[in-house]
Length: 161
Image (cartoon, rainbow, N blue to C red):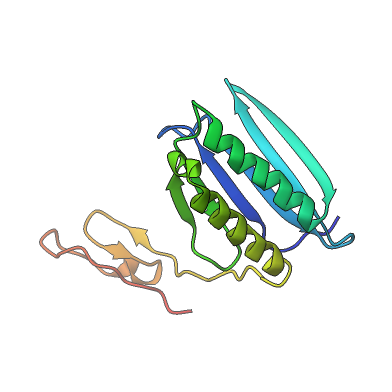
């Protein structure tokens, strides 16, 4: 099945260790023009994956409405919720914020925008020059032939491609 190049990610953060965090990924199936949701539940050391497929935009938004409403009622809810949308900066809010209707509605509106753009956004891979760190300087393979004295301050050199 071909999927959209990008997806919507919801990271449900339990604590600072991130070992028990849950994730939700929403992708567009390009063959059916429907959405698939994968929910990975870190359940006390075991990982349970739930797949929902063939969902309309309306079904996705209903699913998320229930997710955020449950978060607002959960007495032991997530510490934070991070939302990653195609071509937009990530946002993270305290799990407590979902008790406020404003935050639930904003996340739903943000995801609705992400669903509208998910199949039109293309991931572009950037080429980053390689940098190697030595004891005294940061060097690229080309500049390794130079000798650095211990009193020379550390600096960066980038390789031209």
